[in-house]
Length: 275
Image (cartoon, rainbow, N blue to C red; front, side, top):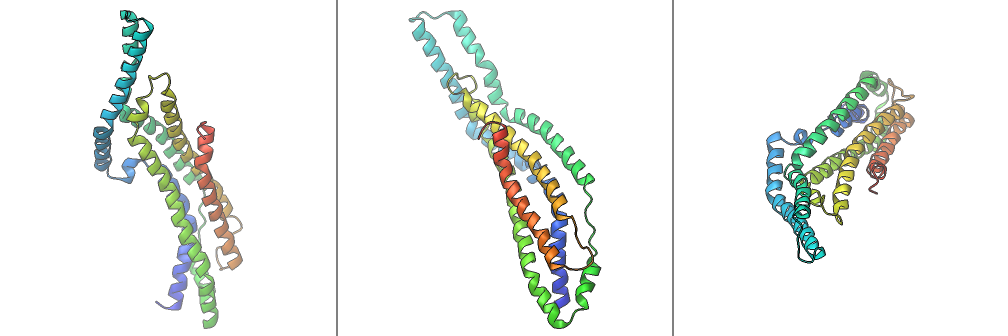
């Protein structure tokens, strides 16, 4: 690889890394677990989690039912009222089916909300106007330079090249981290939902629903961050010549994007009242 080829590679990584990141991240935010993995694998994972956790969830549900029946027995001095016993048992029927169908319920909620998220993602990426870089003009602005100047330019590009590469990886980690967090909440759903009928511990199930809603809301906040980032990084850009001051000015919005994406989780939880 000669010097100009190396410079061309750096130009493509730096400038394409900035523009392509917008659509990639927007699509990744709206991704479902079935999109990340093969659908069969995700279904197998849900079945495995159900086999492992469902007995514990039903045991928790049974413990709460037995505890309430015992309290009812103690309050009635050993004389159980058939109506009260029936009402207590009936109150556990709906939570029982909720626990059994917890994954299906979450799938319905996720499908409805993620459909909105995907529509928002498509509308945002359509309304954005990606900048069209004139890569040949950028390369020509370098090829006319003396050999030593080209070496200096290559050395100067090391910083932006490394920054775009590292920051791009960090952004992917943040976005994938949200997806994995959502999957973990999804897989353990039967356990917190088993606390629904308990008067003392039902807050666990309520907090679980709030946290799951916060993860969904975080996706919307992430998309908004991407839109703001695109407006910051594409303003006042020279598309035909390499200006190193302007190049570094393209890097800073990516750092701001990383900071904003990190804060979306906390902000979503505060908005849902779980932080």
